[in-house]
Length: 122
DNA sequence: GTTTTGACATTGA
DNA sequence: GTCAATGCCAAAA
Image (cartoon, rainbow, N blue to C red; front, side, top):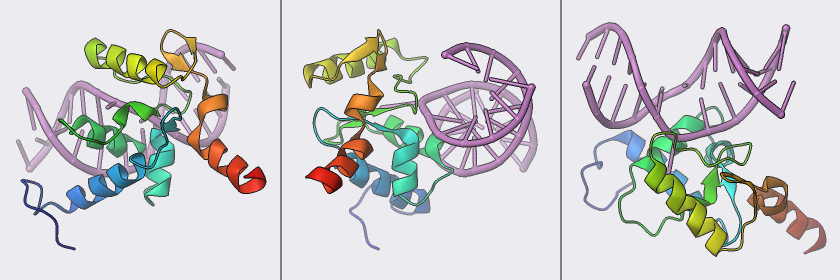
């Protein structure tokens, strides 16, 4: 598959990253997904960590990286308080409630759950 | 080249 | 609920 010109063109991993981005872009505003969910949907079920790496590689992008949190609903980023706070602000701005300073209410805002409910009741 | 670190998840205690 | 061990793999050191 041919891709637009960038430094990652020759790396097969770049395609995986793109798959991740493609999925993340589909998370609706006001919803969240976990790294593991993204990995599974991209057919790399054991590769949650790579999703984190893919998002970390983003610079200025339209990819809504802030809608991705850990499986327990926590904001990750241990060593980047600035980004961590920005992610929290962006989520709050979208109406996502937090049950703790850095933990969202997953049960309520989980994208997958929303999709299932849409299938059932939508 | 190898080792360590890291925006994670799962399992078992 | 927490914690540690383990697996995964890319980037940095």
